[in-house]
Length: 268
Image (cartoon, rainbow, N blue to C red; front, side, top):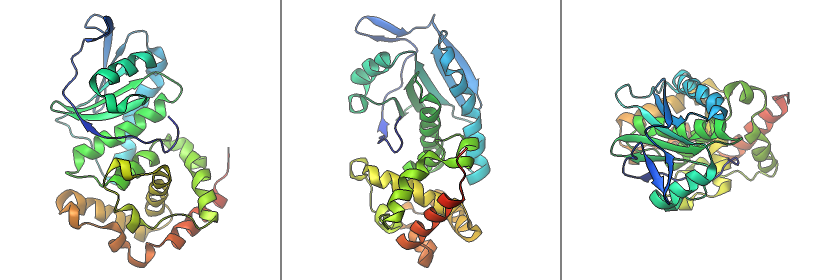
């Protein structure tokens, strides 16, 4: 997955254990192995050893989200993940079941049986599963998730914690824009309410605003956590983080924050 790659959320019917496309069984009842990893139930082909590292990261991402945001995956609803050994198998499945998502390396969908994630083995599987898992956990927790928040948090948790503490790969992209003063206000991002209205630049800015809220200021962090609590129990349509942050919520302050963090980070 490329950083800030656009993803979308869809509603779908549940997937049977046996997937048959174009006469080829991709996952059958006799083939797949099932693993429980914390709040995740992972179905994958027995030969899919390349996925072991990514699967181990699932428990990590759940712990990181709870530790940083106080958001815990639901105990009564497992997040089901189906891993394909080859990208062509995933693409055939998406073409038949979710054509709008064809071409994606991984996708999160909502179904009557609960959250589902479909992904293919590949070099970006760790980041892909972490990203889509954030979507799944957020949509379990909140009745409505603002688009900028949904994608911003997914991008923020995408890099394994031990790596992002050294030099998050997102930082270089937004630093270039911060030097030009070219990062939008949070109020502008809050107006984006459909996936097709969110540009790659908006994905970058969403990550930057999440970083701004969580790093470097206890006041901003507390305001952000209060916002999340209001979002869960209040009226999402009347909940605005930009209003809660007040004067702190300006494009200039965001750009200054990114430039400061960029100078502090040491590339390993």
